[in-house]
Structure formats: C-alpha cells, structure tokens
Length: 327
Image (cartoon, rainbow, N blue to C red):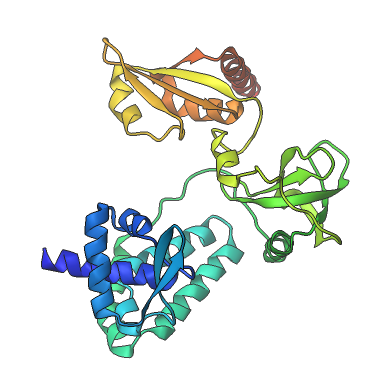
C-alpha cells in the first residue's frame, strides 16, 4: 500500500510537471482515478516533497504546476514503458509508415540519452529480453503510406491556419487541383487528410497516397468552430463517411461471448437475448467497411438493420461470387 501511494505521488508530480497551465483538483482526481479528498491528500504530499510546486489562481478554481520539470531520477522510464515505445515504432515501420516510425525511434533515442547510465545499464537486460519475447502480428490489409514531406506540410498548414493546396487523383477520375481548409489527420488502414471546403464548409476526407504537390497556401483558413476531429472520426465504423444509420446486428449464441468483448463502435449497446444470442446496436456511417468486417463473423452474424447495410452486403457477396466463377 505504501508503495502504491508513493507511485501515485510521483505520478501526480509528473502530471504537474507535464502541464504548462497546471492541474486542478478535479483533473488530479481524474488522472489518479480517485475521489477529490484523496486527490487533496496526494496534492499535499506532492507539495511537501516538491517545494518548487507553484499555485496558480484560475478563478473559480486553482491550479498547481511544477515549472522546470523533474529530475532524471523522478522521470526515469520503466522497461515496460520503453518496450511499448519500441513496439509502437516497429509496428509503424512494419505497416509501411517509415516517417512516423522514425519519429518514435528518435524519441526513444532522446529518452535513453537523457537517462543516467546506471539506470540505462540496469534496464538494458530486461528490455532486451522483453523485446525478444513480444512481437506484433502482421495483419492483412492495405499498407498506408504517409510521406514525411506531406505530413510536415499538412501539419504546418494546420498550425499556421493556412489553406492547403494539392492535386488529388481518385481512381477512374481526372486529377483535380484542390484548395481546402485542413482540419486534421486520421491514421488507420489508410491515412487521410480531413479538410473543410472553403466555400460550403463541408467536411471531406482525402487519402494521403493520392495527394501530390502538397503545399500551404496564402491567407487564413480556420476549421469550422464547431468541428471536432474525434467526434467526426467516431461517426463512422471505419474511415468512410456517409449517411449515419441505426445498425442492429444479431450474433448467434456461439459467438455471443466474443461479441460482448468486441469494441464495435463508441455508441454501441449489447442486448442479451433469451436464446443466448446478443443484439449489438450502434449509430454509424461507413456501411461498406462494416460489411467487409461482417464477413469475418461468417454465419454467426445476422444483419437486423438497416436495409442499406443488407444491400451493401448482398452486393459484396455477389461480387465475391463473380470472382469465384472467373477463377
């Protein structure tokens, strides 16, 4: 118990040092997953151990922060933390994302360079053993590509609130020059720019590997004030954005346990049925990607609704049948 409390105090101090504006008591409680009174006791412990803590008035609340950071002793990472960083970089490189992998590998080198040699030497055998003992399974699917120069140009335009000019080549269509307001990036099975039309404000997505001649334009381009990238991404089952549907799927009894542990969508609910099956409900767009996913459930999944998902699934099945006939 004493060890747990000490770890919580150090973790809270790290949070105070990592926040430029400082943490409120409510934010401390959320970070530590404790109640407000426990957060107050943890804060007092940090104040006693770290006299450099500053109290900042932020009416109607107060904030506490540690300016100048913590020493290498308090900030030394664990072997498990370094392992996850190494695996994340390896996963990106294996998925065809060398630019993003290089950024994590650079961070890993900087973290190790900042560590005391004694701490690094003590960690090295454990880290080497864990790296050998864990790997990431390669899954079939598209290999997303994110050119470092393209990413840098998009990020620069987002930070400077400038429009983004690029040529977009969609399969089967003539390449077009576009000027959009960049709103952010989505990384997944394919990588996408999320941008707003400068006249209508309509949000659109553009695959990065289909973009060329990407550069920030002149003038100011701010995303719509009510736009939230996280909320936009969570609307769809995958990446494709279209009309939002009320989805209901019945999973047979033999697949019910797996379905209960499956993350279908942020809005999901799961209803147990008398026969042992479950009905999964959520609101989402992206029926084509959902249909592709349902193939992996075989006969265990039945589409209750919507009708459009049934039509998309029927179309996919027909296409698969035609491909088999040609074989």
